[in-house]
Image: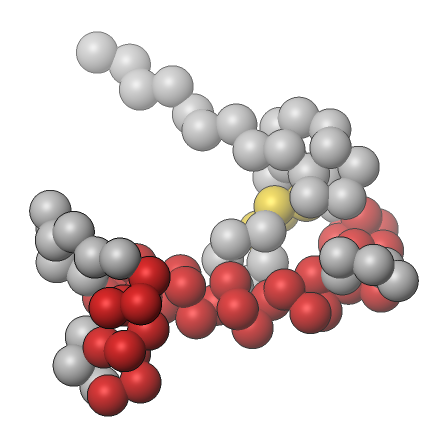
Length: 84
């Protein structure tokens, strides 16, 4: 069976099939470096402000055991105490 590629939308211009991913948080997708730079420097809702939070949540998701349900408060508590 063939597996369909995941399509991502550019965080800045909303075009489909964004191929770049932020190297820090691994969560934001962009169609090109120009959109990535513009989103980083945006006056409102900038990726510069979002990136540290997305990086933290991406790290939590990667440390969770498969099938492990966890609410946000428990995840944050576990991350802070080092039990995740």
